[in-house]
Length: 336
Ligand SMILES: *Cc1c(COP(=O)(O)O)cnc(C)c1O
Image (cartoon, rainbow, N blue to C red; front, side, top):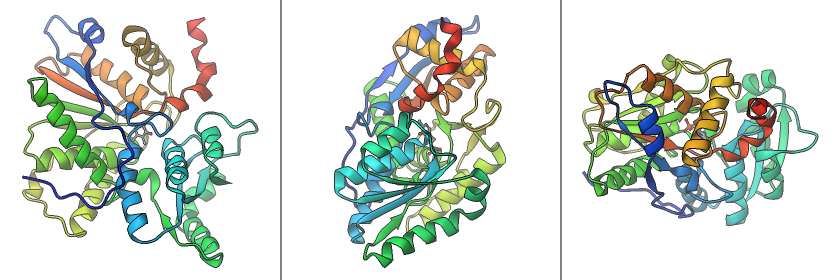
C-alpha cells in the first residue's frame, strides 16, 4: 500500500546509511550460527539535531507551521535528547522553545542541556515528584504564559510520541525496508530502544502497513513491557483516530523486551558501559548509556544466549543520543 504523509518540514539528511556490523556479527555468532547484524544509522539524521526525534519533529513542525504557532513547548529529563532536538529545530525554524525539565539545573550545563542553552531555548526545572504529578498543569501553565504575551504555542508530548509523531517512524520503516531491499534481503528482526514508545509504534505500524514480515522489538529502557504494550497501542490508536486506515488491526504485533532495564531510567550497570566500549572499539560506533547502549547491551546478551540463532538478518536502529554519553564520563573508569 502507498502511504500518504501529512505536511512535513524536511530537516533530516535522509536516507541515513544502513551498515553491516561485521566484527560484532562474527564475535557474537554462536556454534548454532546467528544473524548478520546491521545498523540503521539514525544517529546521522543531522549533526546537532542527531537521532530519532528529528524524524518525528519533521511532522510535528509541519503541524506547528500549519497552525501558525510561533512557540514550541515540550518536556523531558535534564539530559533529554528530544528536548535538545526540539531546541535546535526551534532555532532553525525561528520558533521560540520552552522546555519543562525534570531534575535539577546543572551548575555547569553539560551534554544535551548545554546544547539547549546554545540553541537559545528557555528551561524551567522541576523535581521529579512534581514533574510526574503535574505535567499536564505545567504544560497548561506555560501555554498560558506565552498566550498572555501574544504567542501561540504547540505543546509536544514526551519524546514527541503520539498519533502525529508516529509518522516519523512510519516513514523511517519505509526507508529502512527499502535500504534492506537494496542490499538484497528482508530483515526478520528490527530492534530499537524504547523510551516513550513512538519510535517502536512507528516502526511497528510502518512494517504492518507495508506488509513486511519483520518483527519489531523494542528494548525498554524504563517502565515495563505491559506499560509499553499499552503506550504503543495508544499511539497507533491516536494515529488511526486522526483519520488514517488501519487494516488488520488484530495482526499488529507489538513486542517489548523489558529484561534489560537495569536499575532504572538513565541508570545503568557496567554491562551497558562495556557494551558501549565494545561498539566503539569493534565498530567505531558511538552509543549512549540511556537508550542505545542499554538496548544494544541487551541485544548482545540475547545473541549470546542464542535467541536469534535462526535469523539471517537483524537490524538495530541507532536512534542517536551521543550527547548523553559525556555526562556519564565517570562510569568509564574501567577503561583506564
Ligand atoms: C528518545 C530516544 C529513544 C527512544 O525513542 P522513543 O520513541 O521515545 O521510544 C531511543 N534512543 C534515543 C537516543 C532517544 O533519544
